[in-house]
Image (cartoon, rainbow, N blue to C red; front, side, top):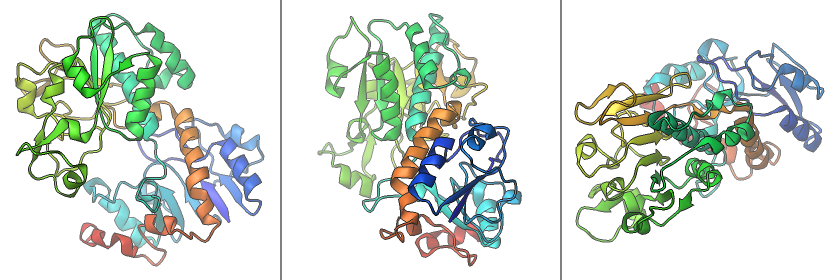
Length: 401
């Protein structure tokens, strides 16, 4: 088997890689029958010379490879026909902006394994960049607060060499002693965000303590799960299983916590048929106290009313005015400051790539050498080399038509 690591072609460019030089070295030691070639690139966080130093060949033409691995969507003109690819295609939810890509993949008879669809038999995702989205997104939130308060100035994450340098910046953070942070979510993203909160030595408290207790002497945060920020209309007990099967009959309970929070870090997964977490009307409520939202989930015009557009690494902050429901200048009176960068792991590409590659080595690559006995790869394969949708993805027929 021969793997080719492709250069990223999407604009704006992404500096991440699926496998670092060290990962490639480990794989070739573990699987002597495996060859790896690297397509030259001048934008990668890992330089071509770092791969070459470990004896990995640089190869512009990857047509002799069995599997081509990238990170972001591959531009249509760069797709090699009759090849097997792995990358994030952002098509399984029928995203309109990538319909042409999936149509081209089928026309070129490309077999696509989508990273997002790689799951264990229980349905849990096997890999992703969520942890580093949480780390960088939460850091950006505190960077935004520094600008909002004028108390400190953090270096942009993408200007830090690595996570170690990013964390060294946190010593600058100065917060009021009664500062309160609410975080929604319980997955990889929330875990990454809480690593930053832990590095800042901010105390975690239970949701009921968050709204009941007085914390005048220290900054605190609480982690809200779905049963905290949503409730049943009829007042009956919340059952997660029932909610995930059918969210009809549920409403937001977020104001209970927003009335006590200064900052909100959004790390949840949200489905379009679920209630809004905080609506535009809720943001107008006199009890609504949040002054800053770090929206890592970044669903535009979705569950978080203040997230009206994504921001960028170059220009990460804007402000939302609840009364006019429009964007206003950052730090405008009465506004909610917003950080909503939608490609956060790209700000720490070396660390994010190392983390992602570790999961690939542990959870995914072995299935190429055990005949995919658990059907992990097959269930993540959206399209076949025959130019058709895999049976697991027949629901996309109307999308590509």
